[in-house]
Image 1: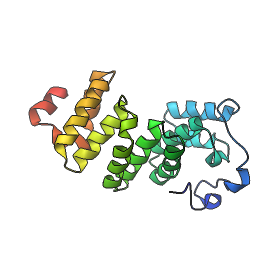
Image 2: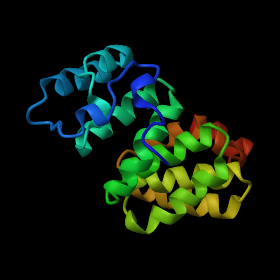
Image 3: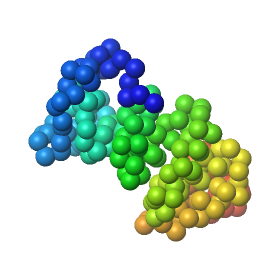
Image 4: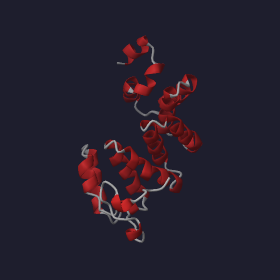
Length: 189
């Protein structure tokens, strides 16, 4: 996957990657990133995006790319999530968040089997990552592979640092509803 087919003409009006390819953004020298992160923490993805410099899509910094994935996830801009997370997953292959974001965006776009292949490929790198296990549980459940879904959900539960939040999340996750019996769902609420 490419970063963007034509970054000079995307919806956000960003500058071309070629025009800024030599400029590297880092967290240390980018006060806009910190302001954008604060806006996102307050649930304002539009302000978070506006606070970033116009050349952010040429970023070569994992922290900035993680932030962009979070902004676009919150904005439900799945094509943007994919265009950032797919190349970032390959460039920063030990950063689970890029694999998770890429897979989830593909799933939301209706490419659940592709999403499953992405996480199956990456899961051995992140054996202690709740998000990977949880996402795999969701994707296996969405593809009606329920025994695998249960296995990954059990692993995610063991990795969760906050069991009440985990149970709440599971009980409202549409992909996982097939795993809950009526009795279990009533007990979790």
